[in-house]
Image (cartoon, rainbow, N blue to C red; front, top):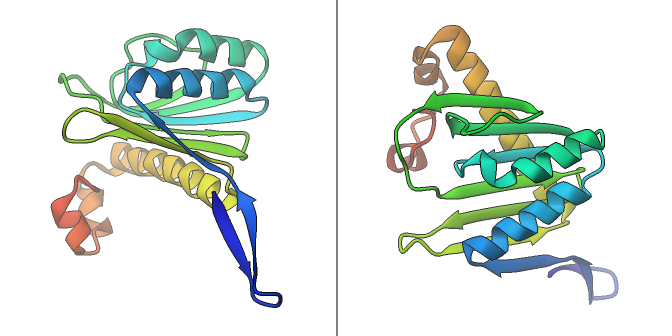
Length: 170
């Protein structure tokens, strides 16, 4: 849970819920449930095989929900949604899932060095907005790369420690 300290009364109020889930199967089942329950719009950023969510994405699409997916890897199935991808073909170990539904709930999951998966799920409006923006920004960067080639990244780097030690804008 997240709390808000009320500076006038010096009281603490619960403002939103944060839940943790462990294990890839539990996380995928929760994500599938989020996809099915969405009514307006879904954003997904993952390197998992998209076929895992095929039935849920098809059902959400049939119900009129707009679905946008970003992945670095080539999709392993056709889906009734917008897919933006770097189309990388090499095999990889899946490590991330970000999901934002209806601008009201988000799931952020990843695997650690041992392969164990952990997820945080929240309805905190700022965190939902940050994850939704992150997925949009990945798509914007991909479109810039496709339009102007990889050289565009050279102009975007800011020279941070984070960039030099993570796979960001490469």
